[in-house]
Image (cartoon, rainbow, N blue to C red):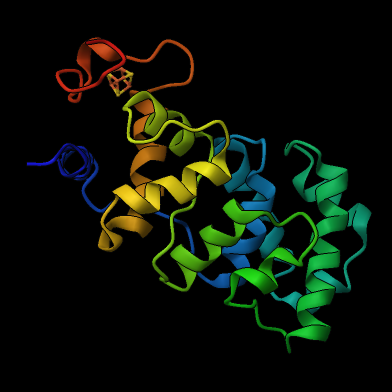
Length: 204
Ligand code: SF4
């Protein structure tokens, strides 16, 4: 079995079903991913839930008062900036896209605060397109395992597309997020108990 196939099959065995999202609606996915930037899941998930209990459509979010949104997401990093971004994004979706989150990378990148990772989360998880969403976990783990040798997430995305079979692209993010949270952590990775430690170049 090729190295990359072994990595994918091992991660699939460890996390059958992959990452479980609260909701895969495109608008929910977009806003929750914007909130998740530089914020841990334990904080992002309840904050998104609180926000959508009050404002569950682009229309309601577009008309919201920034301070009311801030109060709902105040645990999230950069919550003041994100509150305004969420309103701006909702207004653009409402006025330029008929209330629907765009399903193309080009259009998503025009939204304030939306970079390739956020766009790919929407395209992969909500629209089920074949894309690789590269966050800090995917970038770190791909480099530790030697799948790529890159200095930034955008470069990692391009290089991973060359080595990972296309049918596995959209599940890589979820598998590596779980692996990165539990085993191959940023600080002190748990290499001794890692199921990939016999093939990982980092400790060979
Ligand atoms: S052996 Fe260590 S560095 Fe390599 S993938 Fe496993 S946890 Fe990460």
